[in-house]
Length: 145
Length: 85
Image (tube, rainbow over the protein chains, first blue to last red):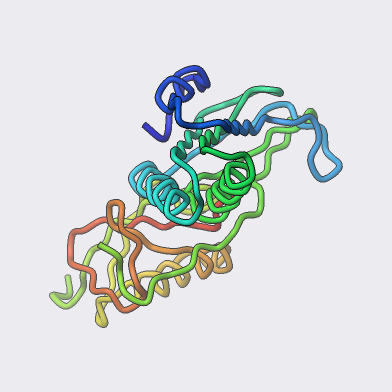
């Protein structure tokens, strides 16, 4: 599972990736913050195109496992309306050593932000709303199947 | 009804929903390609031309290339710039 409208469960990700061979555990959580671009944020609506987002997240997990000396990489993203402080995304990486685990977690997050079909629509304290500017997806020269 | 016209259902995401609604139909003549879908959509919703030109297209869980063919009656998903995290 990569996308859910339910509150994210870090304990479940930790249990899923539990591994006694690993000496490093890196967990990143992204949360809804109070201010953005000089405006006071009241809440954030996350929407996703599920089929593509889930496939891309699975691809990123596999690519990260391939690129770094780690044993586990899992990511999950929340959808729906979140209030300040709620967790929108978790990345969990486990590896034998800390250096590749830190690097892999950062890599996975940056790839998620650049490639996963999720959109943020902020609601501000004055009642106005705005979709955040995003990153244009690279279009394949041939469709990937 | 022109027999050469293909009807494509567009599924919008993100800020594109403000312009297209969640789904919309277009009718298009040849060439029946993803690039043509984007072009017809830009003509129909000129206020969203910038966002449409920046959008990738998908079928199911697959991103499409600009010259991929599209078929009458199918759904193409418009994927504007992403902002997750």
